[in-house]
Length: 156
Image: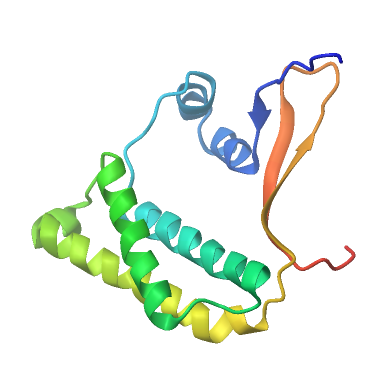
C-alpha cells in the first residue's frame, strides 16, 4: 500500500488571518507561534465543545444531555481552556480583576450553553458533528481543509 504524504492544510481562519495581516499569518500559521487567548476566545471554545458534546449525545443516545450535565460540562470545558493557555486581558478585564473576569466569563459560557440547549438544540437533527473535510490541492504545497460543525444530512 502506497503511503500518502500529508501536506500542511490551510483553513478558512488562516485565509481570514492572511487577509487581515500577512505578517501575523506568517508568524502563526507558517512558523507555528501560539498567541495568547482572549476572554471571548476562551468562552467560545468552551461553549463550542459543550454544544458539540450535547449534540453528539443526541446522535449516540437519542436524547440531549440534562440541563445540569450541560452546565457542568460548560464549567469544566471553560476551566480546561482557562488553565490551558496564556490569556491576554484587556483594560476593562484588568480593572475588574482576574477572578471577577474569570467568574463573569465562566457564567457567560454557562448561559450560552444553556440557551443553546433549550432554544436551538431541540430543533437540530444532527447526523454528524464536526465533520472534517480536505480538498487535496495537487501541485500545491498546501491542501484546503475545514470542518462542518453540524451535518443534518440534507443535500446541499
